[in-house]
Image (cartoon, rainbow, N blue to C red; front, side, top):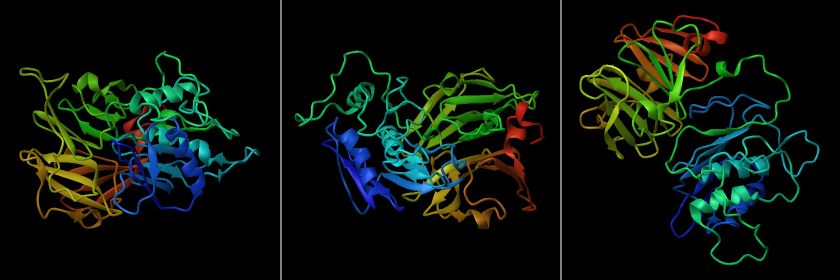
Length: 403
């Protein structure tokens, strides 16, 4: 099923291509439409927001973890894609508390797809904890303030009176820039996990800094693991923007060549360089190209990147349900024509869609897929792995292994 969201200045269609209760999905969108100028209609082609039910790793870098874990996640605009964990027990209008109410979760995730961040108001729909089934559910005033701060109020009076909107600032913040990495909705835990939270994290991009430190980005945060102390778990965590001036949040991929670091999200490419005379520290943004992946097929999405040498950069991604690799021309900022190759042909033995890639040696690439990583010898084409990601990349309470 395909649907779209349309207003005078907004067109955010989405695909709903798995069996589910359409009325609950429509009701979830209607909750937001009632407080804005937005309307929804179904279309059959060219959607901008995809809705799907998936299990485990499904190609967006945020694998689902089964029942009673992450219920769903959504991307902020411009992407807006929304995924639900197909292993959850989805229910509608259930008072038994034996399942997960599809309407409540969908409405929360569509709030993210429309541009809302989490709220710190406990009774708000956008509060980051699953609310459970609530009969005759209505948006909290904080939800309403947040969505109206982006799109404004309804153009004509409604037949039912809207809640009084205080003039105080909403805690549900509007996102001003599109982001990649999805936010998640977690229920109240029913069974305590035996795996520390930091050992279940996934990251969106990684590269090795000039001094050998491992750098990984998760959402808006940068994790630096010192080369001299990689096993203690004492990663230095800071906002990515503290190091990369006005960097995009939730990047798809990062790679570094001598003198420059490149950040990719969708088709946008940012280039960062250090000020003259400095070897480490903050990078200044020197280029921001909105269509920096010229030649990438329409509908393809980059998920990882690696610089083998200064002149050999590989981009990995998915296209029409399959994994591909492309060569990237750093100087012209476009895909090298005729370089598109299936992952299974270019890197046999490696999962077709990977979340991260990095190289510490010109003849070896490390691929990360979900909670596992692989070592690929580019000369012999031999694959080592899979190995557990957390002990090698996070360390500390996750164990200790050499990368």
